[in-house]
Image (cartoon, rainbow, N blue to C red):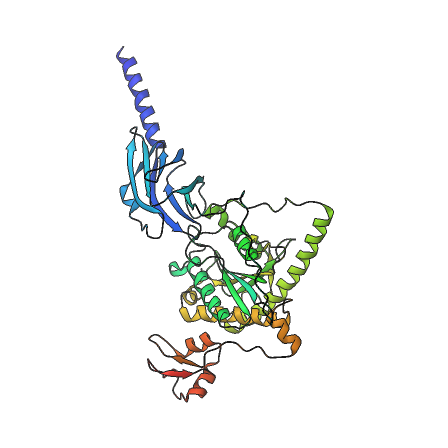
Length: 449
C-alpha cells in the first residue's frame, strides 16, 4: 500500500515538473510604429498557444496566453505615437497570462507566432492596424491625374533603407547596426535629390519600423518610380572582408558564391520581420508571359547601366569589394517594370568599414556617390516625358536649385558643407578666400560656387 502511494506521488510530481518545464516565459517586449500599424513583439522561451479579441466602451485588445509566465518589468516601453494608452497584465487560471492593451481608439488586430531564427527565439507578434487602412477587398481611391507641367514631369527615385524595426539587419563591429546606417544614408540621399531640379525622391520607410520586401517594391510602384535603389551594409563571417558593392537582379543564379550567400541573407529579412512573401504568379497566358519577359529584359538592362555608374562613383569614395556589378536573386529587386539596384555600403563586420558607417561625414559621401551615379545615368537615359528629356531635346542646360550662400552652424566642417552642396572643398576655399584648411567660424556666411 505504501509503495503504491509512493509511486502515485512520483507520477503526480513528474506531471507537475513536466508541466512547469513546458511553460513558456515571456522575457521581453518591443514596440514598433510604422505608417499603417503598430507592432508589439513578445520574446518567448517556447512556442505558446494564444488568442486575441477586442472589447469596446472603452476600446481594449485582450491577449490570452496558455501555460505562460511573465516578468512585469518587460512593459517599461514607450507608448508615444501609438494607439496604446496603457498595458495591463495578470495571471489567469494559475497557469495562464492575460495581457490587456487599453486603446485610445479601435484597431484591426492580427497575431501570429514566429519560429526561432539566427537573430531571435520564439516570438508572438501582434499587429494593430489603423482603422483608416484600405483592405484588400476595397478599391484604393484613384488619384486625379495632375496637370502635366509644360517642361515635363520629375524623375522619381524610390530609396529603400534596408531592414528596420524588428529586423535590425547585420549587427557588426562595435555594435554598429545595419538598419541605422541604411536609414541615415537614405535620408542624406533624399536631401540631395530634393535640391536637384527635375528629381523627386521617395523613401520606402522613414523611421525605425519593419516593411516586408514585397511591400518595398509596392511602395516604389505606387510612387511611379523610375528607379529603385535599396541600401544595405554587407556582413561576413570573416572580419577581413571589406569594401562596397553594387548588385542587380539575376534570374539565372548569382554571379558569385558570395552574392548567392548575401541574397539568401537579405531575403531572410521576411522571416525575421514576420511577413509572408506575395506571389506574383497570378497572371498566365502566352501574351502576359511575353510582355513580362520583354519588360524584365529592358528593366534589367537599365538596372545594370545604372548600377555601373553608381559603382564608379562609389569607387571614387572608398574601397570596392568587387569592381564590377554583381547579380543575385534579391527579392527587393524583383520588380518587372522598375530598374532596381542594391548598394552594399561596406562590410559592417569589418572594423574599418563599421567605423566609417557610423560616421556622419562618411554616410554623406556614400549618399553623394549614389546620387552622382544615378543623376549621371538619367542624364544619359532620360525617361520619356520628363523635364530632363525636354531640356535635352531643346539643348538647354537644367540648373540645380542650389543656394548661393550657407551660414556656418555648430558642428559644420568645410568637407561636410562641400558634400552637402555637391561642390569641391578647393572650390569652397577659393570662393571664400580660405587659406587655412577648414578655418571657418559659427555664424559666418560662405559663398557656394
